[in-house]
Amino acid sequence: MNALLAVPAWFLRLFFQTIPLALGQVWANKVRALLTALGIIIGTSAVIAVVGGLTGMKDFVLGEFETFGARKMWVWGQVPDSKETVLSWNDVKMTAYEAHLILDNAPSIASLSPICGTSETIAFGKKSRIGVRVEGIWPEWHEIEDRDVIFGRRLSRIDIEEKRQVCLINEQAIEELNLDRDPTGDFLLVGNRRFLIIGVLETKEASAMFGGGESQTELFIPFETSKMMNPYTGTYFVMQVAEPTDARPIDEIAADARAEVRFILRTHRGLSGDEEDTFGIQQLQNLITQFNALAAGISVVALVVVSISLLVGGIGIMNIMLVSVSERTREIGLRKALGAQPVVVLVQFLVEAVVLCLVGGLIGLALGMGAVTALKHMPNFQIEQASVPSWAITLALGFSAAVGVVFGMLPAIKAARLNPIDALRHE
Image (cartoon, rainbow, N blue to C red; front, top):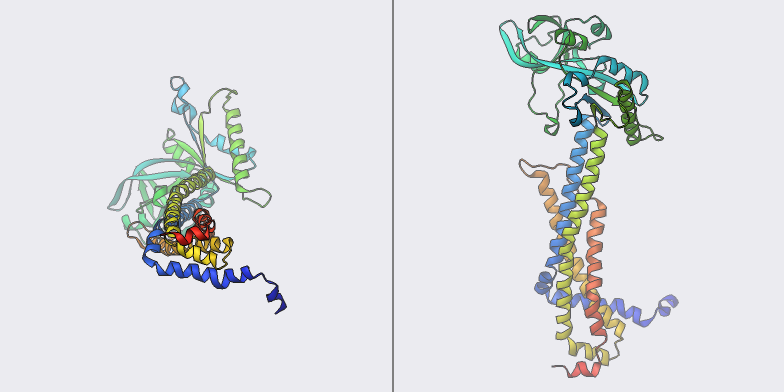
């Protein structure tokens, strides 16, 4: 009780008289209040919808990257623009010797497989398929691509060294060539050569953003066998960088791996300091980093654009509050004549402005959440990962309240400074 008596009277009046009075004024003019807060409603709903949509899109893309393999790295031969008249494609193509050099001298590379391929006609009995991609690989390809066999066995190092005519097929090939459910031990004609089926690979659906889509017949053979059949095919390397640790994150490992591979290849190819690389390097981690930077930039731009709606809404609230001060001049004069302190009048109008903005923010929040939910169920454009982070909700409501304070301050100060005698004379 003593503590309650120690609280200043104006503070008690603020809570038990001024704030309810301000809320009552807002409620008494519901339609005008709703129209006044329209800019805040649009701005807040736009912030929530944009942040939710971008968050969902970002999570979706990063999830696809993760599925594809965040530790992957590719190297291929390429002729620099400055040497198009000097070098041919055959001069810059990757070789198995360079693959061994990288594995022996690049500690940041965990595994590597060279890949080469041709399009062949494959047949089993009376069934045949034209233009099937036949790729030569090393056994390490299984770990890099995370693809194991469901029947039979993987390719082995002996298959590579002895250039055996053995192959792996996928489940789609079983269907298209009318093979047995477990076709291991059967022979296929690949071009004009007989290949023994030693295993069936599990199907791994790739996202459309990485060239996936409908499943197609796949056939894999030992890399050296493929080179024996056609030594002029192009070759590229697919690699997997070392596992990240707390002390060494993936960004650092990816950068080291790139530097190591580039140094090894430039040294082997005798490239001096000012000569261009005769190979290309791409890392999935680089793409992830670039995408994150792009997504962050888009988010900032989008938030700046939609925040303009909040500022416009704030200006609208300031105008309406100034009109409200003019309409209620006699009321303000009467209150001040009865002893109301300027701070009480100021707080009353300031609270009205903040309430308008917060009500608009809450309505906008509900509309924005509805828009995010709609994104999850839109036909042909579903973003199942769409969600609104807590910081976006806090930002939207906090910005709405701040707009109320900033743009409500001028009308509130004007009301607080009114001379009670002049206010009572106001018509």
